[in-house]
Image (cartoon, rainbow, N blue to C red):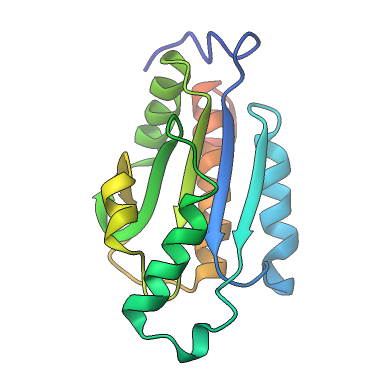
Length: 170
């Protein structure tokens, strides 16, 4: 692991966008999600982007719904963004691996890393094609609200690992 934590951070601060397709944060988990998100701001500018389902979602087929969600999401993405898609078919990596991924992106002066949690039926192929990395938290399937909490916690954990802070082993 590179000890030159975020060498260009002050010159070119990498931004992190945690993105989810679906409803707003669940009231029961909202405080915990916001707490970890706030902790990340000690390392990187961070924001949540929650993309609501299309208004006609109830009448769309699974395929059409995924296409509509993809079109909505892809409008918010720039060509330079590094997209990490969370999907059960992705690569299972450790917390230190997530830290290394953040470090690599910072070293390469990535302007924005976007983590995407897809909709209820997953994501359209055009998002799979656009993703720079596909990450699986587990082979298990979790409710999206829990994935939001785990994602925020793991990004915070990765930042603390890079700074050699004790959170990872506390």
